[in-house]
Length: 423
Ligand code: PMP
Image (cartoon, rainbow, N blue to C red; front, top):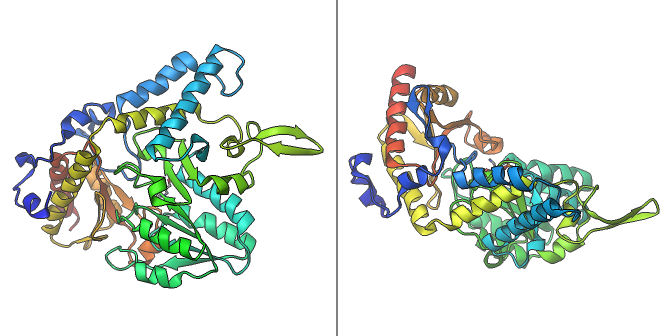
């Protein structure tokens, strides 16, 4: 939908038509049917975590009611059922991101653990003094600190790809930074603080030309459009289940097979071994080599159910709906005196980050909450970016498939009231 057609609408009551029935989607999410502080909940903190549809909640509950057992022990019927469901979920993830094989899908606790795994295992084995790791200025802390830790151990250096005032990554500067010392480029597909969609396909092509590997942090991309790791040609891709309508505690590392095969284990323990003796231990094959200990079985099954749910959506219409919500919200934001949008890149998902002259983001957040509106305030785990913009933080409204134009109206009505109280 063009911006013009959106901005001509007087208000949400005009029910901008994207051919997507957000009200019907909304009914699938029990948590949204509640009042907060005496008002119907408007949940606009989707970049932090998404809500869970009934199908996901039921899949987890069903697993615990009927199948709960440890996996890969093969001793009895429940264990067989748990293992079958757990591995079926892995296959669903592999299909969802178009991985070559389920063995390349490693279960982790989330994006954070997936990046730590690569930094510690791949980085520990491959980085040395003089090597460079490139991350962008708009990374989440989880894509900065693990690289700093391994850089400190190995003598490698972490260099920063610049981001401009609009929140756009400087692709030219990135290209100029690439040389044979760059061993890893680790960037987010979408910025959680700004919503910027980064040109990762171009970056991967450029990085591969100098022999660098590329990790794409897909935490904020995965819920918005179909991801194809083979088409991207990335070396690693990471995401968290809880940002894809699945449970917390489960996440995914996809890796190129030859890299995963060559990488040493991340953690030692049960499941990741083939044989153990005090003379020496041999490791299990992929993906189990990286899955020490009893995994989050219910989490994996819940994530599988979330993927089934997402696959049942018209994803093109869903993305158009989110885009229309963003355009509608942006038009309203531009009419608020003293409001400054933070992150105005041309290519972005439905994240509206802003500051208001004379008001601290956390005060705005508190007053919004009192009116039943859940937004995020603060640095969004992107302190270096906030430092660059010289901001203490922003107010961030992030939209998902179950948000409506009425939610946007409620957001701005509440903001108007908050302004009146603060200014
Ligand atoms: N990267 C990005 C871009 C994120 O938005 C987040 C979560 N806010 C993470 C990494 C970390 O994800 P998790 O906390 O689920 O590990």
